[in-house]
Amino acid sequence: MYSARLFVTLKPKVTKKMKRYRTLITLVVLMCFVGTWAGVPYEYYVSVNGKKKAELKSAFYSVINPHTRIGYSGLWAAYEKVDYLENTNAKGQHQVMDYYSDEVYYFEGNGAAVGGMNKEHVAPQSWWGGGTSIAVGNDLIQVIPSDSRANNAKGNYPLGVVKGSASYPSNPSLNTRMKTGKNANGELVFEPCDEYKGDFARIYFYVATCYPDVNWENRNDVNVSFKKEDYPTLKSDILPMLLQWSRQDPVCEWEIIRNERAYGVQGNRNPFVDFPNLAEYIWGDSVNYAFDLYTTTTGIPSGEQEPPVFEVEPDNFVFAAFPGEPSESRLVTVKMVNTVEQNFTAQVEGPFEISDDPDADDEDWSKTMMLRGSQKGSSFYIRLSAQEEGRYTGTITFSTRGVKDVVITLTGNVREQQGELISFLEDFEKGSKPSYAAASVDCTAATWMLTDALLSKEQNTNGTTSVRMKGSGTLEMMTDKEGGCDSLWFYAGNYNNDSGATLTVSYSLDGGQTWTEVGSLLSFDGWQRYAFAIQQPGNIRLKFTGGGVSKMRVNIDNIEMSGFNNEPVDPDGIAIVNENENWNENKVGIYNLAGQRISKLQKGINIVNGKKVAIK
Picture 1 (cartoon, rainbow, N blue to C red):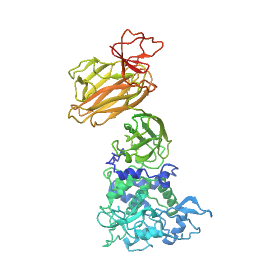
Picture 2: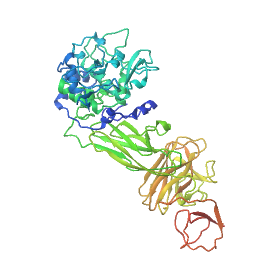
Picture 3: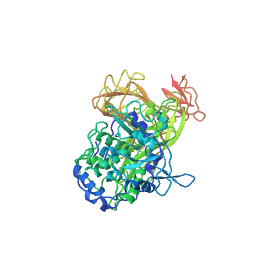
Picture 4: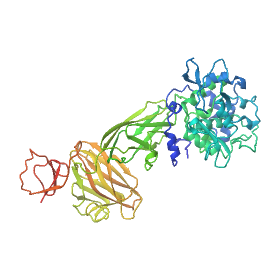
């Protein structure tokens, strides 16, 4: 549902088709995020303020219905002022904008009709008897240039989604901008391509608002989308689809440009372009809220508004992964307040990818997404794609109209699971804690505070003992690891048949005073190893915080940290030596498993020149 006051979109289930749509990058879509807003005078819309639903629709009717009648014969001259693109041919003639076809046409000048094109009624003229002399028949906002063959194929079909084979075009590669065929109910419909579905929905909204009193006919051969009535005018069987299209394909810069140009020629505007969420107040999820002209999402500049806020959290991303496998995904949150538009794009460069769903199939991760923003924050996920061993860098760029882009650097570290210098290994084989009561325990590599957690011999373990922690528990290091941390690994999984517990992993560089989150594991699928890149120097300690269902439990074991900027080594085997064997620490590097340099070998496992050495 869309909140009328905060304009927050709660994320619906995203289908693969929607994800594919968001990856479509065309000239018109890219135009959605550049340019400037000419501004609408307050007095033009002031009479609509504070109204709801049917009353709001009637108020907009009173604003937009009075306008200059261009006349059907005057449309080509108007198109030259409204529907031209910046592209020109050798003669300097501008290209005609066409929603219906991939064919390229150019204006011929002096109001002449363009060969091969028609003046096409988005709401078909046969739906009111065919007259073009009445206002709806020659309205510049709803009658637009079209390739004649595409126009003939569209006929008088309503908007809809074609199911199965299309009757036009015969070969999809011949025209990627539209198709016709039967919908799920067996009715003939016209389906625009995804980039223009919102555009057509907003034209339908305009027609329903500007022309509720037209004698819309009931026909046996086609399902007319309008009825002669003040409200809702649009029929109930098409409204959900139009609202969905408008949400999925937000207002684009081309629509804004055309709306401004049409205003200069015809003297009225399409308010559904000026106010991208207006349809929600008239027909959608915000009908019970009063429309506030000055705080709703709009391009209208206001001297009373606070400066726009466009923020991204977190402001840095570091990923760790094993060769041939993608990294764990990271949650990204974008906060937008007082921005001109409610949508934004996120585009990644380098071997990184983004998705609405952290568990999406590999083919559903993409390089570019377009999302609705919100004041509370809109979220999606980013990860490092499957790569060979090595270090990788890239960027993610966040864009919305009217504010500076936010560019964040991405770093990825891909290493083999084996073959790493392990300067810290906590296997929990040392120490005892048989109850859930809070207590600190000296374990193999560090002292840990366990709250609602215990040490026990479990099925999920890499030795004989692991941590069993409730969703309400914490596992926190009480001592620092020196030498920082490059990458973190650990094993985790559900205890026994429990499910519903979550786990958040954090690190601290100031002795546990403040914590930085590095990963939230929302669920567990078996006993497996997880990897995160931390890449921080200095003294570091870790904390594992449970969440989700408080009584459900997880196991944690073999927490490993490589030292900051340590290079990989070969740890084949463990040398067994005598404690009194002569080792000169000035000639060899001797470290304990906490990564601390020591002067002589100690009982247990040591690291000597990158090799594991055990004292008898």
